Length: 162
Image (cartoon, rainbow, N blue to C red):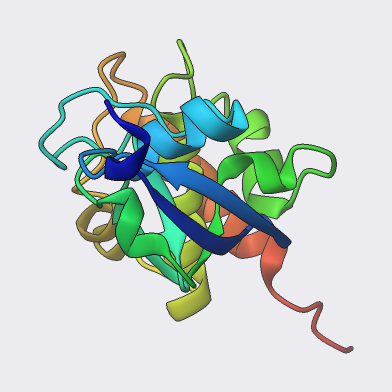
């Protein structure tokens, strides 16, 4: 690929301003892996159906396998690696509930759970199932994932005053 077919983009990645040269066909997953060695968003289905490639772009979860990297110019992107140093209530809940087996889908579930709890801090089990319906776990850890979301919701609530 010639250098002229690449495009320079600037964006914020995990709270850091960054620049990258991207090919026109690169997706966000390609960009994150090739330029920044971030592998939490993983391509699995390449159709935006499984949630393994989830990243948060300008505050909304997107399928990184479908979103063209060039369109991220000027955006703010958050990946699971942003919280690698300090676990948040959602990550702790996933650990407590054992809500993973192979771990391949876990970053996408964690990011989607954060989005859910930001918009609905006390979701019912039906709410959880509906919101996470776009994420697939090939190991079948769904009961533990549902439990983890409930734990995270409970642990994220402010303590009631007595």
